[in-house]
Amino acid sequence: MGAVVGLALAGGLVFLVLGTKPSEAQGPTERTTTASLGTVSATVSASGRVEPASTTDLTFNVSGQVASVTVEVGAIVTKGQVLATLAADDAETAVSQAQAAVDKATSDLTAAQQQSPAASQSISAAQYSVSAAQLSLQQAEYDLANLGAETQAPQAEGEGQDQPGTASNTKTEYQAKAAVDQARSALERARSELTQANAQQTTIEGRVLEAESQLAQAQDQLTQAKQAADSLELSASVAGIVTAVGLEPGQNVTVGAAGAAVAEGGGQAITLATVDKLTVSSAFAEADAAALEVGQAAQISFPALDQVTAEGEVTWISPMGSDNGSVVTFEATITLDQPPSEIRLGQSANLTVVTAQADNVLTLPSAAVTIFDATSGTVQLQTSDGQFQVQEVGLGLHGDSSIEITSGLEADQVVLISLDVATGAQSNLDRQFGGGPIGGTIIGPGFVDRAPVVVGR
Image (cartoon, rainbow, N blue to C red; front, side, top):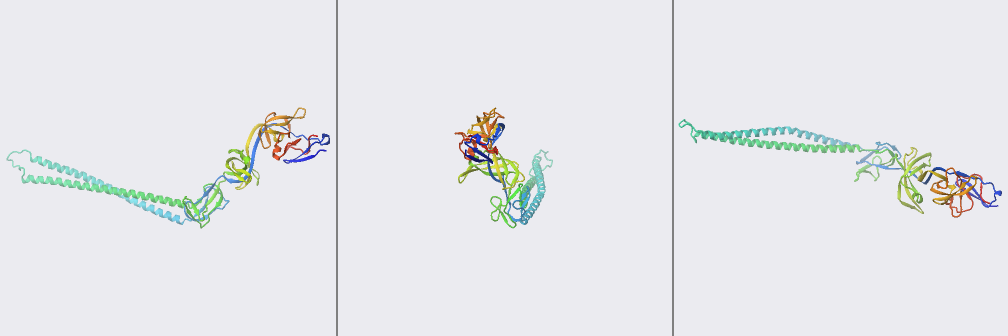
């Protein structure tokens, strides 16, 4: 009587009866499968936790004392929602002072501008005076010149005309010269008045420019004061979940060199995690990480949530491995395409990344193929009389539970779900469960019947 050996493989109980005569053993139960077109996928798996794709640290940009904090860790906030405030007393005083400075600068500018028309009128009057003085001088000079010509005009002898050098002629010439001198003096005074008017206008224009500059500065200070008053409210820049709160009422915050306010104790203000894009980071075994590439598709499930899954893709792979004792792992990040609303930050997640896939190819269950190397193997092909014979096949992609057949078979041909472990051949099950070459037939996991299989005599 031969020995009976029991093997538990992937949930199926398999019995090998070696060296037993067929007449002494129960008849074998044959399990077959049909070669068909389908998809072969190779995957790697890992686990991790749900994390936000990005976080935002929110801080005040002005110094002050914390007046209120309206959120706690775990709160879901919307964009623009007020999260904390600073006391408004100092800011309101600064706004009032800046507004008063603007009002004064506006008044000074108005006064300076009102002086400008009077100065312009003075210039116009002075210019008129200069023009009139110039005309008067020209007339006086003309009269003086004509007086000499009249005294030299020929006259009849003895007509009683005053002779040159007489008292009458001398007086007339003296008066003409005096008129010229007076006209020149008047012109000089008019020009001096014009110069003074121009200088006054320049001074007024300078006052206007200075008043405009002071007004601009005052307006800038007012804008800054109002912005500081508006900055008393710390609002959410994005929608998300509050993951940290480093403020409490009564705390003083001070703007540091980087322009962000730091609370007493050095803490940040409030940290938000975005929820519109989530990731799962996980450590993959060294052999699995070698098959990872950015852009590969991934399936994500959540142990705490039945029937809740998500799709994603590999978005980052660490270029450096981590040595955890005798195991080397590589960190990788999978970004979820559309996170389900049921999941929460920090939740456990299981990852399955498709590292290779062949579509619309001829496939067989991996257990039906005896593998010699990556590209060749054999199957037990059913013949027309119902018997089985060894058939060499070409192999393509080795998937998780199926394998691509590239040659040696056609669709709809029937093969025995078995692995003929001849000397020099190693089966998938051998590699998975650490077995070696033995005589007989192994029924693959998931394809066994309850009845024991009898092989050989």
